[in-house]
Image (cartoon, rainbow, N blue to C red; front, side, top):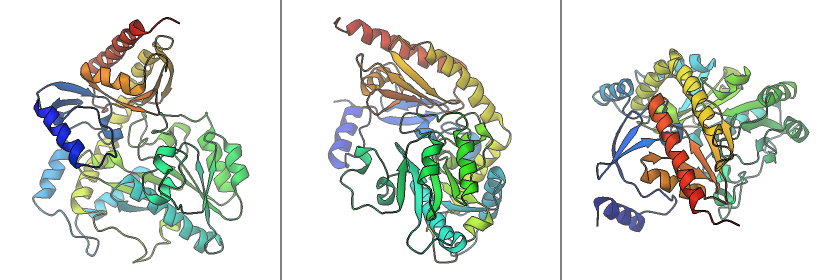
Length: 408
């Protein structure tokens, strides 16, 4: 039995089966490339669900982490530390917001946004206590906590975990009219992903985000943008909302904010929103810890030049051009923005999982979602040549599956 097989067997036997990983065991990585325990190299086209926007082992991020590891890693928020102010100020400047509330995971940041929106609704908008409602979209993915899965429409995420928290109204994604119709005097927020990642990189119609902004402003409702996956350079702009020139009341950030080194998330909003929290009303032992802040500062610095955003735009245009050329040749639809694409495979040809397994054998690691969809989201540092090679591998895989198809 190979080392990979041994480790996979032990993992399957001793860990909960909450994931269905591809049968590959990664040992090390640099840039956009991974190496398994047997020494085989793979091009990473998932980037940790956008956590690794700046690549594996980014020198600036690693140096920031090493320097901080030698000094101080944790104090808890019981005390100030010397990285906290710069992180909050830097992220506030990046988002254009007065205040930042650091947490750890994306789901924690979403939970934070929900709590803040409700408290704002009671104390600022004047919604009667216990009656606050939040509008969310179908096919959303905001995390795995019990509150969040209660307003998921994905049976795999939701079923079997009830009872669920009340206070959420689910409307059709991409329909501003549906949001307008769902709002009443109890509505405190509209929580949406500017691009729905887990659903298959679904991009809403042009103008949708701007309409949501207008509706929220007209009705004194907070617009919360979950940019955990779409934010921080992935789509060719700092935030996906930037494509429409829209500024939400709250940004929910995570994944790439930790540079692929540590979990870092945050909510950013103005003082009139985040200022409703008082000491003891919300917190996290590890949220905003010195190591996380040092890494986050390095990430903010990388984004400040606009280099990564421009690179995602340019390479993304090439990626989408190449992928669209496969429509009618095993591909049904291509969606996305920047270096982020959802590719619907012809279900009569293969499942998304089968395509991913075939690509793995060719040295490309990618992830499927919802049956026949695969997602391209390589690190933004990927080279143009390597990106083209990955699409070449997909082209060859589709040809192979087409050759196996049995004529009707």
